[in-house]
Length: 147
Image (cartoon, rainbow, N blue to C red; front, side, top):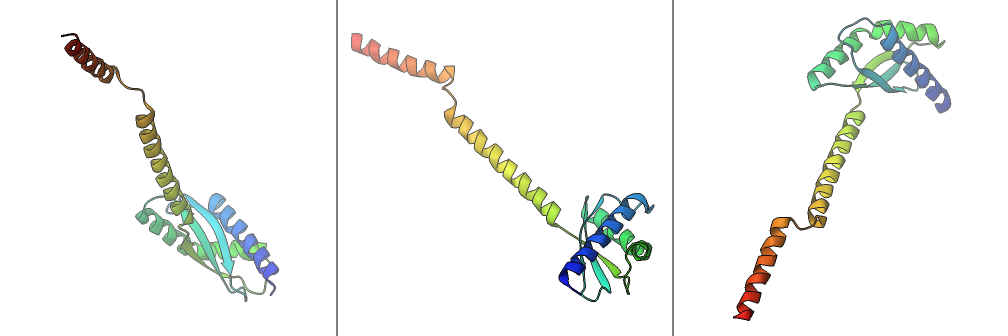
C-alpha cells in the first residue's frame, strides 16, 4: 500500500476513534483523553493510537486500561467507516509530548519571572533610606570640613 493511502487510513482511524471516545463511550475510566495520532502498519492489520491523557500517572493508567478494554468497540466503529480487507487491531500508547511541552512552558515562565525580578531589582531607584544614609554621610563630612 502506498504511504499516501496509509496516511489517509491513519487519519480516518484517528477521526473515528476520537469522535467515538468523545461521543459514544460511556466508560467512566476514560476521561480527558485526546487522540494525538495513529500509526498504521503497512499491511493495515495493526494500528497504534497515540493518546494524551491529562492527570497523574494513576489516572493515565486507568484511562489506558479503559481504552484497551474498549478496543473491540472502537474497532467495530472503524470497520463501519473504513472499507478495507482487514480492520486494524488497536493498541493504545500514551504520548508524553503534550505533558513535556507543558513542562517546558512552565520552566520558561519560571526563568522569565526570575529574570524580570532580577532586572527590576537592578533598575529600581534607590530607596529613601539609602538616600538618607548617603546624605547623612555627606553632612558629616561637610561638618568636619567646617571645624
